[in-house]
Every structure is written in C-alpha cells, then in structure tokens.
Length: 357
Image (cartoon, rainbow, N blue to C red; front, side, top):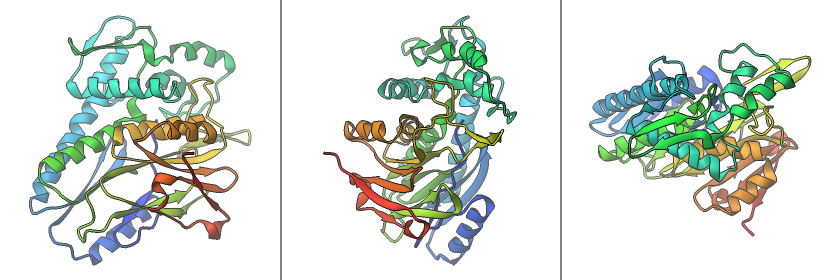
C-alpha cells in the first residue's frame, strides 16, 4: 500500500520532478559528473522502479549482490507471489502457524513494535480494508459502512503471533491478512545499505521507488541533498534536506488516489475508521538512520495528524520530520531545521520550525 514517491536527489542541487522525467534529469546530471568508480543499476521490484548508485571500485559486483538481495526479500514479503512467506501466512490465517525466515520474522516483529508504539496508526493487518477500497487490484470502490464493519474487526496487529524460538508466525483469526507494503521498502533499503557497508562502500544512494537511503556523503565529502516534493505540484518541491547516513521517506495522500462523485479518496487508510485519513496533512517526510522505522512512521504520523504527530515526535529521539499541511504550511522539526532549505515561498507556502519544548 505504499506509494511511489516523487522525491528525488541530484548531486549539486537536487530537483524533484515526477515519473520518467525525474530519472531523465538525474541521468543528465550524472552524465556530467566525473566522479571515479561510479556504478549504477536500475531494476523493477516490489512493484516499483529502483535505482542504486555506488561509488566503489568493486561497484559492479556490489550492485549485482544488492539486486539479488532485493529479489530475495521480494520473494519473502510479496502478497502477490503465491508461495511467498507472507502469502503463506495469510493463507493459513486462523488455521496454523507457518515457518518463516529470519528476515520475515524480523520485519514482522518491527511492524508489531511500531504498531504498538503508534497505538495502531500503522497496522500491517489493514490489508482486508485496503482490498475493500480496491487499491490492491486498482479496482477502486467506495465501500459501504456495512462492508467496512465486516473487515475492521480483522485489523489487529496484536493477533499476529510470532515465535522467535520456533521461528513461526500465525494470524489468529480467519480472514486476517498482512500487507508489508508500508514497511517492506524501508526494511529492504536497510538491508541493501548494510550489504554495501559490509562490502566497504563509503558513498552510495539507494532509491527504492522514492524511499531514499544515503550511505555516507557524496564522493566530494559533502552531504547528499534530497528534494521534498510539493504535494500540489509534482514538478515542484518545497525544500531540500541535507543528509548523511540517513533514510528519507515520505507518505502523502496525493500519491495514490481515485475520485468518485466529486470526492477524492487516497490510499492511506486510518485503521480506526477504515476510511482514508483526513487530518489536515498533505504529506509527512521522516528522516532517520532506521529506514524500516521511517517507512512505517511516515504512514503512522500521516494518520495521526499534525498535533498528535508532533507530540509523538517530542517523545522520541530517533527521527525528524517535515510536514506539509492542507493550509499551506511546511513544518520542519528542529532537529532537521538546520539541514533543511525551505524553497516553497514562491508557491504560497509558509515555513515553520517545530520546537521540542
């Protein structure tokens, strides 16, 4: 249920554009660059285009290993691959536990932990409700309240039972289903980053359909710059973030949606209501060393709404955030403010910094 995010990175000054033009502009910039030992690969996995750029003399082999790692995780986590471990888990809901790999038990545990931390604003068991809305199969449909009432009881992360000792997972109730779309690319970016770091890579960019992870700095030693898209105009951006060894992940209702009877319905579903979250936010960007957590938190904080999200941030110490609101504000938490350049004034946005106290 995660989204293709039009956040992009350039090497001197990054610009955000959408779709193919985004990569075309990047390719032009990269063609002009003369950094040594630059290797790049583009692939399609997890239902999105992924681009990996590595600066290392052994980069070609590292990219091959990274792509194999991505494919391995896709085969474990996909809900559309019939024999994936997640598909097997869903098929055995209410029947019996299934044996799972270390990666799968780790991501399920992380998802449970974040679900508990956010009081269920992120919930990997939202899948039955998302299917009602047709976002999984792109067969869009506004469900009736009666339809939602049949599926909402199945949304309960606490009913995902994990056994670390036996390395099994079990969904307690028949009809439950897990969808890791809101966390899988974050976990994958962490896995690829770790692989590259263990291979000695000091500088790399990992772009998994918009989930961005920066390893080290740019080859010239300066931080990477990442542009945060204007949710109202995919050819524009509201600011630039400088990062080193961090993931930058955005969720927004503008990314996937449909319209019916003059009303827009987006894909980020509030697990409490079964309806698309409408809490005054256009987008939430999370900046963290932990890509897995950043991925899930970008959804959770969007569901929370600004005030609850800021309260949650003030109680945490392992991430920063940038919020774009319906009323035209761009709000950066103070831990990232010095590394964020606001660029939205020409499009009538106003900028604020959120303080911890």
